[in-house]
Length: 438
Image (tube, rainbow, N blue to C red):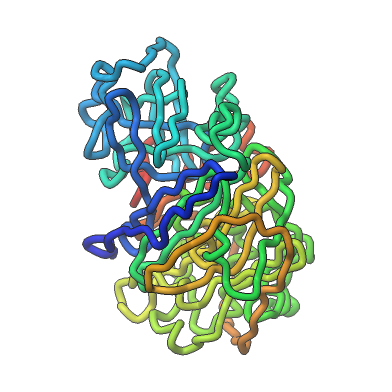
C-alpha cells in the first residue's frame, strides 16, 4: 500500500548573496511518503522545464524524449525546438538496481539549474524503456562519478561539467531530504553546503570515497541502540568481518537501505517485534511510539549516525499491525544507503576531494534563512536507547529480494558490477522487465 498523493514541496530558506561563492540551490518535492524527491531543471534554448530525480547512484542524465510515445513522465524533451541541441547517432543503455532499464540515443544541450547554465551537457534521450517507470518524474540526473558508465566513453556528469566549466567555486554538492511527517520538501545545493541544515553542536564528519565510481564509503560498524548487531545474534553469528568494514554506496535515488542478508537479520533480531515476511522484513507499525528513542546506527569515521525506529516503518502489510521495514535484505556483500538514512543526516558529496561528509540533520518545520559554509570538523552523533530481542531463525539459502511496496532502487548496474557483489539474486535477474518504482 502507498499514499495516494505526496506532500507539496517547498524551499526552506533563501539564497543568501555570497560574492565568493557561485552555487545553485534547487528545492525538492518529497513525493509519496519519502519514496522519491525531485526538482526542476531546464534544458535547451528556449528552455524546457522538467521534473528531475537527482540520483547519486547513477551517472547518466536520462530524459524522456518526444520520440518515445510510451515513455514515462509528464513532459518529454523536444530537441527540434531547441536552438542549442546537438544530435548524435550514438546509442546508449542503462540498467538500474531493480532491473528496470532504458535505452535511446545521445545528444547534447545546455542545462540550466537555478540560473547556472551548463553548456553542451551530454543527454541520454530515452526512446524505449521497460514497463513501470515512474510517471511522476521526467528524467534522472546521475550524480555519481562519470567513470561509472563503462559502456559510454568520456561521460561527464552535470556536476563534473559544472566544475570543469568553473561554474561553481567549490567542487561539492549537498543534499537535505525532508520527511512527510515534517511537511516534506528538500534541497540540493550545487557548489557548497548549508550548515544551517546541520544539528546544533555538530559539524561535518568526512570519510574517503573508497571506489570513485559510486559514492562508496566504508561502514565501520552497524549498531542498534548502541549495541553492535552481532551481539544480538549470540552464538548464531557469522565472523565479525561480515558486520564490520562493509562497503556502502550513498544513493539518493534509492528509497530504503538495502543490506546483506546477515546484516538485515542482525538488525531486525535486535528490534522487538520485527518479523520475516516472505522474502522481506516487517516491524510493528507503532514501533516509533513503542520505542521513541530506538535507532539503527551506522558508524562512519568513528562517528555514529542514526535512523530512528519511526523511520523504519513503511507501508502496512495485510494484517495492518505489521509494516514493511525501511531496511531490507539482498544477496550482495555491500550496502545501498538510501533515503531512509539520508533524510536523517545532511550529506555532502565532495567530488573535488573524493570524500563524503555527513552530519546529523537539524529538524524544523518553520521557514528560516540558511547560510552556505564549509564545515571540516568531526563531532559525535551517537545517542542511546534500550536494546530488545527477537527469537526468529535465519535461513539464507533460498532468500530473494522482492519489493511488494512502493520504493525506488536507483543505482546503476555496470559491466563490472560483480566486483562489488550482486544486489539481486540470480533467480530474480531472469526477469526481463521490472518496475523502476513499484
